[in-house]
Image 1 (cartoon, protein in one colour):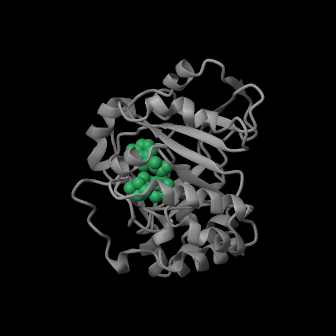
Image 2: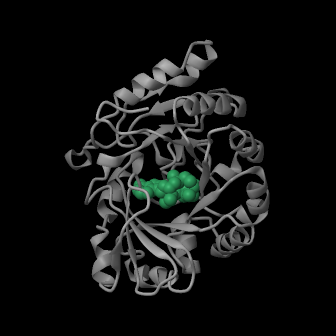
Image 3: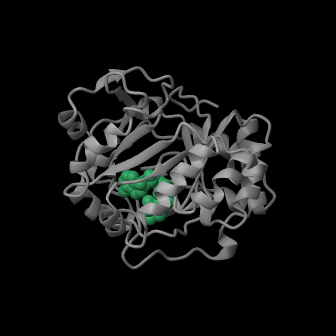
Length: 318
Ligand code: SAM
Ligand code: SF4
């Protein structure tokens, strides 16, 4: 599938729930979210059917996200189902890692290939502060369980937050010295209710390069990756910088997103959505709508003009 700018769209990101077991300050609004009704959420069978249509149209890479995907009931059944769709060559998940110690082995057995784990600080107190309810030791145990289960190489997602974790940049990067791990620094994006909080706490990923000038830029094996890659001399792992604000990566974007309530989003930073669930439940052909939505994918996002989106990040999944 190609969009109208000639970009090949082969990567589907599916948010399987808007619920989460953490309350990250930049993601979950203070008053919580308006919980979606059960009937609004796509069933596992619907998610699989939609994924199948995407695969028939050329998608070969699928990521499961949330909210927190591991709080979705029967998540292993879903992974197993999607893993069995012929044509899915890469099945990954983004998780906060809290429940991973109980799930890692079963996820691997169900067919999951890879994991991104979100971790914004290596300090126990700061972790409880930013997530409000989380315990760092649960994530660290989750990471160990993921490694043991062969869900490797692990990627750690670190959102850079002003006056919170700039002073840990070196500590995170030093983790790559002896281990094949990827540390991905992500610029904080203004999204949903928390857009103003995020705008105030934004710092550019240039800070990473200023703090660690010894990082050497390396080529990425995947040109559609939004990350620019770097390495410390002789390090086993690598460092990725994802700069949605300071530097756009829309030119090579290969993604399309499905929200937990069955809306198709051709761009994370656009309010435009197409109600696939409604069409599916009416028994209509969804493939033409998918193709049309891809054709209408915007050329690039326009965050710098204050065009922030309304939907919460918990309902999109990053
Ligand atoms: N709960 C899972 C987790 O935290 O990994 C999956 C969903 S979460 C929305 C996916 C990713 O989006 C996480 O790495 C999180 O840090 C990131 N994220 C959430 N809000 C963000 C924001 N405003 N700007 C940048 N990244 C954000
Ligand atoms: Fe939950 Fe992930 Fe959002 Fe944190 S970033 S509140 S873990 S969905």
